[in-house]
Length: 343
Image (tube, rainbow, N blue to C red; front, side, top):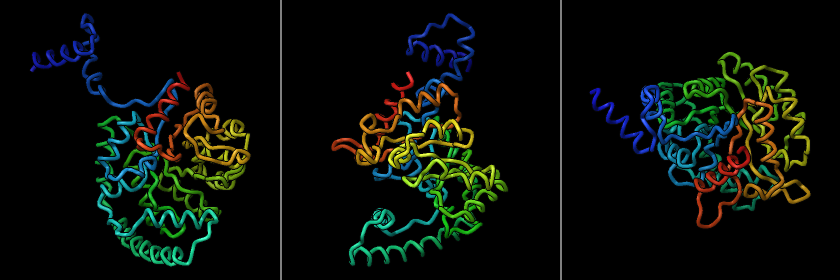
C-alpha cells in the first residue's frame, strides 16, 4: 500500500513537472491531489460566484447537470436556485409550461399589456401553478433534510460551495411552515443566507427577519430597478438577520450613481452582490455583454478587493446569448472578465 501510495504521488508530480526533492512536498501531496482539477473562483481575495439561474436556458436542470455547468464555468461558489436541490430531494414535478408562465407573469409585472388570448392562457397557467404549489407545500412539510446534506456533499466533493439558496418558499403566499423549511434546507446545504425578491411589504420582511433569527439564517432581499439608496432600510431596522442581496446592474439601470457610497455605508449588511452589465436610463437600460454597458464592474471588484469586503460577487447571466454560444461559455467569459479585472 505504501509503495502504491508513493507511486501515485510520484506519478502526479511527474505529470505536473514538479520535483520531488522535498519531503514536506511529499507530505502535502494528498491535499494537493484531493484538490486537483477542482474549480477555484476566489481571485486575489474576492470570491466570484454565480447564481445557477444563469444556466436556465440549458435543457437539463438536474442537480448533476447543474454541477457540471458550474464546474465547467470554473466557478467554486454559488447562489443556488431551488430547482436542482429540491428535485434532487424528491419534490413533485410540475407538468405545466413554467417558461411560458414566467414569461407572461414577467410581462404583466413589468407593465406590459396581455392580449385577450394571453390573459386567458395566463389565468389557466396560474390555476395549474396554484395546484402544484399546494402539492409542493405538502411535500415540504415532510421533507427529509438529509437529502439536502447529500446534495451539499456532492457539490463539496466537486469543489463547489453553496453560499446562498433561493427556493420559491418565501413568497407572500407561502406558509410559515414553508419559510421554516426553506431556511432549514439552506442550512443543510451549507448556505449562510437565503435570497428572495423584496416583497415590498413591511409586515413580510418583519416576519422573515424574525423567522431568520429563530432558524439562524440570514435573509438577503433582491431588487430590480426599484432599488434605491434607502430600498432596504426598513427591513434592515426590523431584524439583524435582514440584509441585502444587492444587484449592481439593476441599481445602475435604476439611474443611481452612488453605488460606491452604498457599498461603503452598507457593506456589513450586504450578503452577496449580483453582477451584470446594464446601461443607465439615458443609454436605454439595456442588459449587455460585460464591458459594453455602464455598470462599473472593474471598479466594483477593485473596491471589494481593496476594502476587503466579505461578500461574493455573483455572476448573473441575463444578456442575450449570442448565436453559436451557450450559457456555460458566456459565464466563462464573465468569469474571465472578473479574473482580468482582479489580476
